[in-house]
Length: 308
Image 1: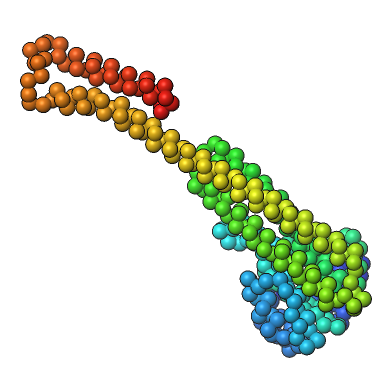
Image 2: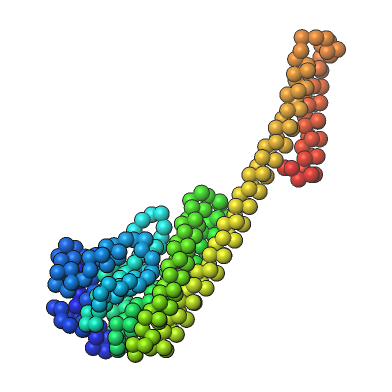
């Protein structure tokens, strides 16, 4: 699906393509692919690189074309992780600006609406790239808040009862933070590369560049903080689980020893030998009382040393 967007104090969608517009393509089909490669002469290798879900943030030049790939966050459709990052490619030359993403994301529609609400004027292709990176940092922070809420919720559940499902939930969130950390650092490196490319072009807006770097640094620091908290939380609950297992084993051992005493006594008196009590009418009662007394003494002793 492709949209033709014109910057009129915010991006406005038009019905057809014209020079100096922003062509936004999401989940391109065969018709979109042919339009890009045959009508606009976009290198096919660029589109193949963007289609790779693991493609890192980078820039690449081919003739008059410049490919800029950055990583943006999105909610995952897979059950293994709640959030992930995907590549979006910005393909530009002197007259054409194209964005291609093979996934539906919340970032791009929100970015377009934001430019209209704020009447933002995009001066050139570098401005668009930097603002998209800035918007990605904002969405990283939004999703990080949701991740933090998920961590707090999982901690509350674990305080009530430690279940494998809650621990797996924390592991999925930790994996998401790893993806976020890698993508944010890649976008930071990309900004340095873009600064070198456009330094002498007159397109570089230093204020916008500084704002984008600040947003990315904030997202990066937040990822590290949440990652440290999550790692500490999982280590703490791992220790709690280990202590609980040890406590259960200690209780089971104490109970086994306590119950073993009457078993041993009964075994002795169950032998086919003279026990010197066979003529006593109270022999059975004596043996039972002796067993209970010794077991009680053992139980009290275990309670005193906190084994029960």
